[in-house]
Length: 509
Image (tube, rainbow, N blue to C red; front, side, top):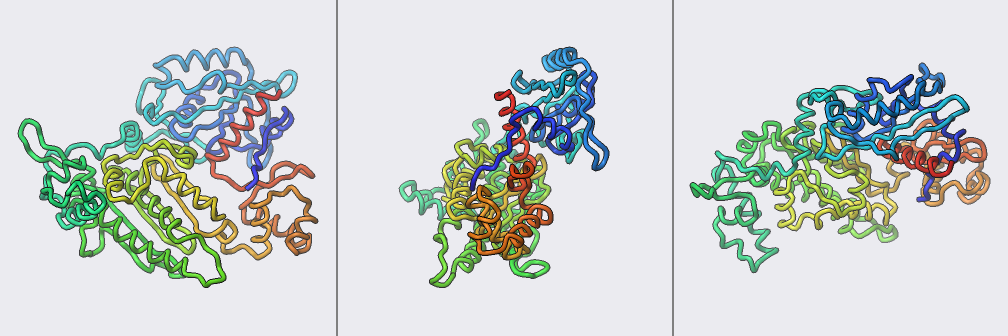
């Protein structure tokens, strides 16, 4: 896919953006004679969420009217106040702005605006709060800032110190482990490492060997760790520690208004629905669905079944290993649809979506659970599951994976069909146009593209207009002959492009 990023190449383009931009998840507009007190609520919320840009000196227009660029009244005093307060620990708990993040632009001879790029803070420094009070923690929702709840602040604290599943449980022992699950897991691990002779170990020694339990050095008592209980425990015992524990898998393929098949911890089953059994049962059901999807006739070409199978397995393991089981809502849920899968788990992903795609930085929330999956052979080398997921999509022209992650939950969608087919309500002309754009961009004229596609200019223009105005799959950038089209993006992606554009303008004026 060609890169269709839009840059600010001059002040006029920045001015046009300032006049038309609306406040949203990653943009805040503020009237500013001096630095407004409300800036710090936005600073806290951007630090605690996904970052954003604060624009000082612009008043948002009502409804559909354009914004008013009024400028900052006293630029020097505003900047002095900003730096003084950023360096005051009693004002902000964490300084997250450098000189490069504060940009001054003269829109005309007597009007200056200030753009402040507030980056997301590292998880270890969250929550970022103001006025020396933890309860003054803010998060960004929609187009505004709101004070974080006690539960959300607690979630920040857990994210700052992951691997909670490594904590020892004082009052839990082998009676809380489902022996059938343990023996089945031990047998599979033994097959992978036969020289270790795990099958000959007693169960307590096996769990200690894998790091899922310890023996108290003083009393000699055997004690489970939280991760081992989640992975191999009895459901009632798990719920004593994690009251909100809930796992679901739904097969929602076809036009069935409900679901065709379900796996859940709250339905009768022959198995204790711990993480191990849920994974084994769900993965086997997904494999059956995949084999059915890939059984095409000899004239149709598909990637090897094993490639996408490996991708789905990585997604399933990530979903279960990165879930915040203390929070428990929304519940951990896997859904199979026609052509795509959806994986949802409670809690924020501890690396950024871009870092997840690049790989090399693994910060699982639950180290013990991830280790149990690795010994099972269910997961790639730590930190490289993300690149595998994206590589499979890119190499096979599938619609790219989509990740949404915030304090409450993480959602990952993957497709085994291309972008055009992933929108079932598109017309044939719209699919033709979208596929051409994905592979080639819009470097040619409408007449040339229509000729290549074998349709009329009228049909092509109609398809492009529908994709942009009705379906909102692509978005216009620029005007007249300079018009380009880009894919509609999530807020975090839009923020990244905005930051790149501002940096480009800074270096070229």
